[in-house]
Length: 556
Image 1 (cartoon, helix red, strand yellow):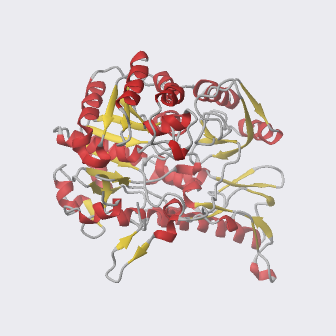
Image 2 (cartoon, helix red, strand yellow):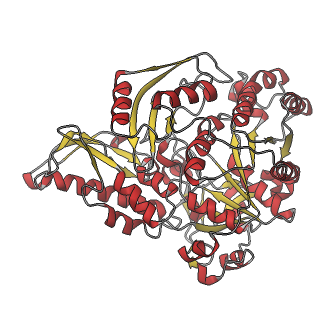
Image 3 (tube, helix red, strand yellow):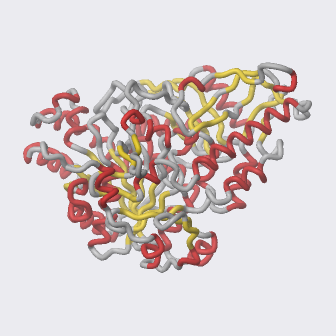
């Protein structure tokens, strides 16, 4: 089979204005970035905002393994299948980050015959949104350090600066640095840090902002440091908001591209604040809901991370009410959860599937806790046996959930017909009765306990001294009503990445907490969470190249 990038490059794309026209979007409502990319104007949103919403379908997955699940591929293939079935459908996806593209992933635009295009543009520079976020983040850092250099009128304690610089590239050498070395004019010497751009709070704010006024309000609330007497200092306090908003003016507008089969895709925003939300912006999702009968969107990593945050944070703030959920799994991944090493996954092993299926089982239970109907999508591989697939069907049937086989990687929309039928049936059933899993009025500790016990299966939660202190401080400062954003390993329900399957009764340790007051949540850190990852031993960048005539290879 051809590589992902070969398939994408051989596809005959439609001019994006023609894709838009099929959905009633005129060329006047587009800001074109060449022939195949565009931003949606603010004027269009104002025109459509009072329309009724279409059906919202969330695609999520089991806990990821090296075997792969194919969540984005499934999302794209499902949207193509729904379009084939005559449903007016739009995709709403996140933008890829350069760090993972050149590091461990090699790209993030789907795969096979279920991709969004132009694939190279999306995986590389795209429309410059991430560059705008990077620049706005670092402008704030520069203004903060300049304030200290110019007399420090606010009395900022340089030992308690929270704001970090950022770069859209995995570079572990920047995690911990010292700045201001040299002459007096070179700044105040202090320890500083870099995070990857998608871990910037500005990314979270871009994803959650309704409009420019909301964006500015959120930017103004960001806590960047504390004073010597322990009072928070915000971006508003150092007069950074207007200039940051100017840099983000165009980045706030959703981006429109297409799938291989010309279904429109609003690709906007990213994995916000390094907590595996991994979904696109509120603005893009809500625009899609006004323009289409079906909107397919997704959330990052497994349902314990991405879906939970989509439900408890994004839906809470945006007033979204999903109609159905697709839970993606592979037989290969279930075998890994059942204890099979990566090297032995092609060999039939029904017993390992039955052992590992407890991971899928827990995700099914979790999604039901939010009041949502779901279908399990098995992203099939040639090595999957009928016996293994039947084991999955039988287990899911016992939990009242149907299984649909998805072959969209090899067949595009035609390989998602069965899944599309299941999704339509669920979305039209009226069975969705969505509600977040905890109330805003609970204390921060009560919210943490709810997620840890109900979603992860923990038996107890313990707190390091730093976390205890931080939570008390946040509640005393009036942040106790905010939702929580759990930062946890994606590989396990627990905070131990080696515990696969369905661990239960474990003790979860909360190491620390930090405030994202602008975005509107409290980040809760469990285990070691990297906000500036390093590159692997063999980075994907080593295989990426470009020919004399400008053709890129190596992305996937």
